[in-house]
Amino acid sequence: MITALLVIVILVALIVAHEFGHFIAAKLFGVRVDEFGVGYPPRAFIFGTWGGTEYTLNWIPFGGFVRLYGEDEKAQRGPGSLVDAPRWKQAIILIAGVAANALIALILFILALHVGIPRVVDTPSAHEPTQLIVSDVVPGSPADAAGIKAGNEIVGIADTAGTRIIDTLTPETVTAFVRSHPGEALEIDYISAGEPKHVTAHSAQGVLRDNAGTPALGVGLVLVSNESVPWGEAIKGSIPLAYNGFTQTIAGLWHITSSTASGDADLSQVVGPVGLASVVGEAARNGIGQILLLAGLIGINLAIINLIPIPVLDGGRLVVVIIEAILRKPAPRLALQILNTFGVALIILLMVTVTYNDIARLLA
Image (tube, rainbow, N blue to C red; front, side, top):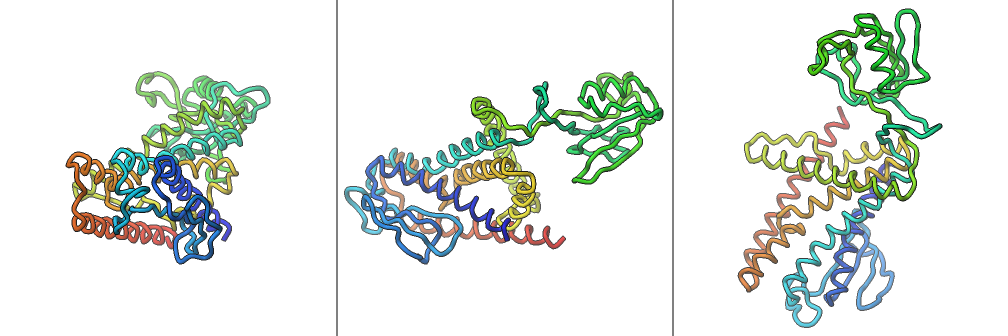
């Protein structure tokens, strides 16, 4: 129940932030905002009316909206009408929602880093607790044969004589220890999915492609810290987090699009609102920092998805505005209605498919 509420809070906050971006841009450019709603109709009550805008709370708690004067072109013309605003102003108002999501994501990343999230450190500061995490495993290596996976935490390693290096577990000390015991059986203690495990693996040569003569287990190791960082470092560290989030999301969407075009689309791993509950639940078990990080990543996803040129999304509406600017006349209303109907149908189909996959994963 708590996880479900947390999912709703995250989604509502991010969508309301998106709509607030549209709201601010519309106000700045003199476009009248008739209503700013939290949740979707039917209406629960009105907070009040300020500056010609009604602020409302609605019964369906899955987002929010702004209702702009002249948005649907139903005889709403004249001063303050969106449809009569210059095309460049319309474009900025549309993009402002995406910009708001990107800005909120950046702020969430800063907060996450300041609170503390797992991050790779080269040289930890004095008394800074760290974990030795497996970053990758060479296929067919001794580590792979022993069942060690990326993401496992190494907590101890010893030779048959019982020589251990638990107190000094770093990538460098483990590597040196393995190289000093060529071909020997090594006892490895590690944690996988919260469970302690113990395996025996023999270091071997020929594991490393670039250094075949060096004994190795075939694992990449990194030191990870959960310590909070100062605000300055958090601001600096949020930029690569946001960049990686954007590039990975775009790459994922491109893969889905290209595989769909070739008839090989696989949406089974795409997570929708139902599947998001398990993801948020896992993040909640790892602390507030992980929740903030996940919320930032969801914000980036919302920003990019809204830029997809599908009718009814901001990207689709932006394409229409650009076409109208080139043609210097409004697009035919019938064509817009057909495109919007197609866009709604496509989104509903995608949501049904993703939700079905979410439920199938939960049942499995």
